Length: 545
Image (cartoon, rainbow, N blue to C red; front, side, top):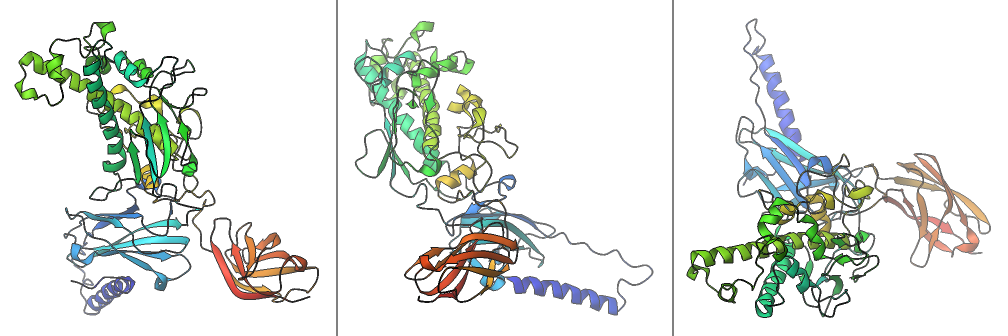
C-alpha cells in the first residue's frame, strides 16, 4: 500500500515539479530556437460533497460533529486514477492549522469511480474545509474540497431513536359507526358491501401495501450515495405501538371541513413534538383518501380504477363471479384462465396503484410531522419554500418546485402517475438534503449565515474587577462579529456579561456587576453570533468584598 499523500506530500510534489523544470532549463532543454512544445498532462478531476447533496445546495451546510456522509467522485485525465492512494478525507478547521486536521477513512466504491462513507472523526464546532486528494498512476494529483460549518444539535437530534408512526386505518371521523377507510375503498372499486369476505381480504392487501410503500421511502430509498441500505430510524406500523414516541396519523374518510384536503399535517420544525395526534376534524389533520377522487379525470387514473368503479361502469371486487376464486388468499394466478388472469391482474394493479398513491401521500405528510421542510436556505433552512403552495415544501435554490419527482414537492405538482410511479415516473423519493435531515446528518441552525473564521480572544483587561459596583472589561483578539455574547464561567457560577459592544473586530467591551457574581477565578467565554466560541481560561478574578 502506498503512503498517503497528506499536505507534506502535496508540497513535495509541487517542489519536485519546480526542481525538474529548473534542471531542464539549466541544461538548455526547452530553450532552443526550435523548442518542442511542452507536454501538457491532464490530471484527474474530483468533486466532494456531503450526504449526496448536489453542489448547488451545499453552500452553508451545517453538519453535526460526526456521522455525516462524505461523497468523493473523480474522473481520470490522461492516466487512470490510482485508487490505492485514496484512503481518507481530511477536515481542516479554519484558524487551527493543518496540525489540527481530523482524518476519516473512506473506502473506494466498487465501480472505482469514487468513494462514499460515513465520517467517523469527531469534530469540535467551527468552520471546516473537507479535503480529499486524488492521484492518477502517473503521480498527478488533484484536490476536492468543501467548506462547511460544524455545530452541535441545540438539544437532542431531531429524529434520534424511538420515533414511531402509527398509521391508524381504524379511525372513524364521520357520523357513521365503523372505520372510514374500508368505505373509502368502495369508492375506488376496491371494496364492496355486498361481498364482505372478499372486501376484507382486499382491505388487508391494500393496508399491507400502503405500509410497505411508506417503509420503502424511509428505509430503502436512501439518496445519500452510500452503497447499501441506510434507513431512517423511524418505525411505521398499522397497529398502535406500545413503546417509544408515537405520532398517530389517522387515515380515512373525506375532508370533514368540506374542502378537498387529501392530507394535512403541519410542519413540526426539528420534530419538536414527537407524540402528536394527527386526527383533528376542524381544521382537518391526517389523511383523507376519499379526496383522491379529485384525480378521477386523469387518464392514467381512469385506466387503473374505472374497470372497478361501479359509477363509471366498472365491476367492483366481489361482484365478478370469478372473484370468489381469484381473490382467495393463496390463489395461484398460474392456474387461472386467460379471462381470470386478466381480472386478477386488473385487481392487483388497482391495489398496487392505490397503495403507491396513498403511501406516497402518507410518506409526504409524515415528512412534515418529522420536521420537513424548514423554509429558506441553510443553515436555518433546507431549501424549503417560504410562501404559498411551496411553503415548507421542497424548492430549488431559485425558490421554485423541481421537475424531479421529489417526495416533499408541493402537492400541486403531483399527478396520479407521479404519485404511483407510473408512465415512466419514478416513485416519489426524498431529496438528498431531506434524507440527510431524517438521518440526523445536517443541523438546522439559523445563526449560521456565513462561513467565517472563529473568534480568538487573546487578552482581557482588567484581569481583576473592582470589589464593588460595575467594572468595564475589554476583550482583545480577532474575528469579533456584531454582537458576541460574553460569559464568565467556573465550577460554581456562570455570569452573563451585560452591555457587550463591538468596538472593532479586535475589541469587545462589556460590564460586570460585582454584586451579582460570586468571588473566584473565571474563564472568559466569547461567543460570536454564528455560535463559534473562544475561551480565555482562568483569565478574570472576582475578589471577595
